[in-house]
Length: 115
Image (cartoon, rainbow, N blue to C red; front, side):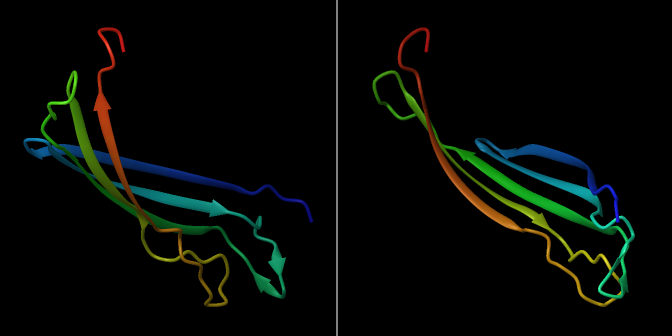
């Protein structure tokens, strides 16, 4: 058969500096995923999947280091897409949404008066 697959996600996020140089944030989203067009697959009826995901993150910006024109190190993390599994049929089977954990470091520095 012919059908159109599509996914839609709508969310909201908020971040705040909790103490000097430390900021945290959180976000939540609703996901609507129509992959099968309500067709029958292997004798099973299908339907659009619905779930939600939550993101958590933090970033710490260390004091400026006394290197050349100054350098500011920072470190951050993000735990993204935490939420319940999504199901596309009444078979009782469901699929986990792809949760990710990320870490990162940065060194922000001035090279000259223009860069």
